[in-house]
Length: 132
Image (tube, rainbow, N blue to C red; front, side, top):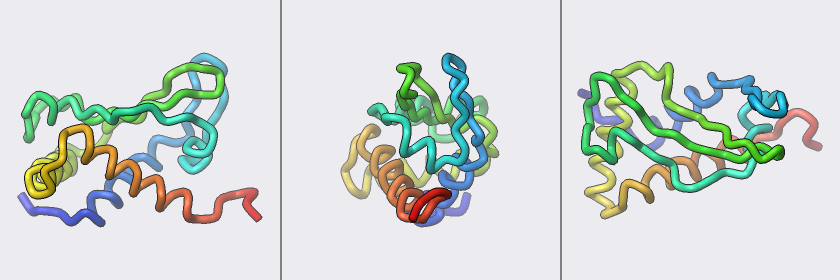
């Protein structure tokens, strides 16, 4: 398996997350499109949960994957998951997480939060529709 860089991991996460939109809240039917709008309107919840990493399964054949939660303005919880991410990419991501957690001495909660924060900074730094 090829080791990926932090920049590649963040790009992988970004491409996957952008592919999850448009997203509709099942409760209020609010439509979020694109990802940037979702980030601006919802309230993110902590922590990002990486079920496979939490169970020390770094190459799962039937992954549960990471899950990031956010609150819709209506109060419903919305999930962004790795569902649909090719298994090889998920394995690359998990391998990078495992290596970086050890190298930086970060917890399984801290490193996914860092990736989420960096990804969020990139998305929000770009002008979106309606920005002036």
